[in-house]
Length: 176
Image 1 (cartoon, rainbow, N blue to C red):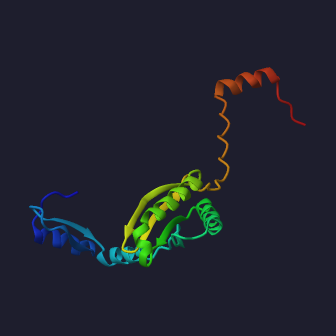
Image 2: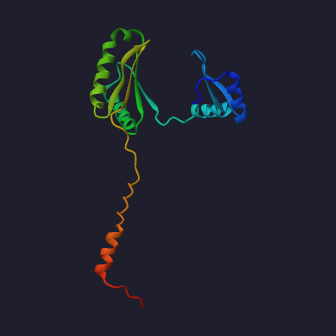
Image 3: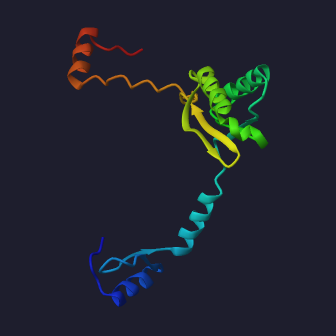
């Protein structure tokens, strides 16, 4: 942290180091700048954007008149996905006059939540978006990560007094 210095002095220091003077917050008085390698910064930012997603969102689609057995199968798939650590989005699509009976969708979702209460928590409660009713569930507990066994702490080293006492008890050393 350098404090408040004139712009030409900051530019000179940046050039001496072979770096760039980057304005971090122009609205502050005085403006806040940082000396950094701007190309390297932009490169690291682009790499962060392209990180692979570790958790996925799986979607289960259904209609208000989906049969109970079919719904059980879909819930079983959702349990499996939640146990693997994925998020699950349930989407109920209403067509035509089905939109007049949104209560059927809400009751179906409440049954699904009852069946999945041990496996999931509600991240986004059921809500209508156009002709779709959707809710998002996340795993109730974190997926167990296999950890390597913890290393054993090293045995305490005996002090020099303890070494001398054990040597005196053992008697004189003999060599052959």
